[in-house]
Image (cartoon, rainbow, N blue to C red; front, top):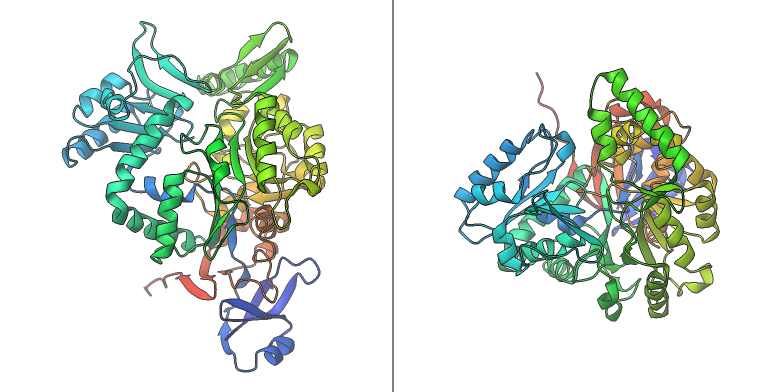
Length: 570
């Protein structure tokens, strides 16, 4: 039994937001409150000094592709600035091919054509030259598209020339030659094939990656993750990792189709239901994708689109740069003369198709988590989700919308009426914020409007969408409070969260969004002893000083899993 004292304790309990001491035993919180009360409740406890630091619930990442993040952690790093141009990518591929047996996959992850000097991805022909004896899969930073070579087509038995699959696009150049670029569902067979063909023969290697990856999460103060879009093969791997005690962090698994994460998940309605499982692995909501990533399904009135184009032009002229035009062009749009509007993106389901899946999931006793970014996808999702809390089976957590990038004010109110949880990724404000600003879309509606969501009473859960964006919760908290793009330009739209609200997003609200508020997210007796110790109380700092906050110690289930190394004395 241990008793923590000597610092600030933030409980995330509105009735008792702060405490002087906290005691834990056997992986659970025994007592929390003033020092005298906790001493009386835990008289034999060992005192642990916080050294003036801040103790709070461990961070929960409510949307983190954990199983795939571990898999891709040892693949080629193609994130900027590790690579700055296509030549850098091709050199890295050739070097990896030289040390890889022929026929094995060469996989890279994280390229962003907007940041490459050529403003394009490598082509199939270039990949064939760099890796003539290996199938190649290069995963876009968004994870919603990829580039492959000829050997990859052979490895998964997909013709080099083919028509667009439903919900996907195969890109050809002006001469009709395949570029290797696969968007949304077109990338699915390569994505699934590469993972399965590399995962099965290298189970031990994957477990090593998993151990290293979760160690990094603990160092960030993360004590629980919700893994969206988990395929059957990945779920089996997580189960074996748990059985062999490799897995040390609790994971809420959101099942997706074994045919590809963007495919209709009918095949996952035969297995575990939401709430099933025990220990470190539990089943969460069924995962659906209503729209794409950069192909988010949206509709903008024509006059707003015209104003956005004008703003883009002004930004380009003001900066003497073509970057605003390139950023605006990275989200394809088309004029709809019948509706007198501009549309874009991919909608994976009709309203009838989505409703059929949702209703089947509800009958099965499952909640549903729907990826919906654009306003068209969001509105369709709100029309097909169950109308009331009574439609959920006992003990099943809330239905969710993942991302919720461009909801109207009316959509936010409807989401609140449906008692939905919303998984947001504040760090994306920084990652693609300049793209949003360059596209002139501030004239449309706010991007991830946190203030509106919180004021409406929605359960807004903080998350990262890692490995798309770095998983550091403190970075997400800073982004929620500051709302700035990578360039430093402020969104200036009044949609900031307060520091207290941002902390709740990654603790209390994240737990609620997974139906785990009885287990975690608040420091209260009986809850799991999932704790993080920070060097300072974030609520006592201004938004500009939040960079000073670092993780000193992480405790998961009562066990210390991370302690910040002591800097050597000079």
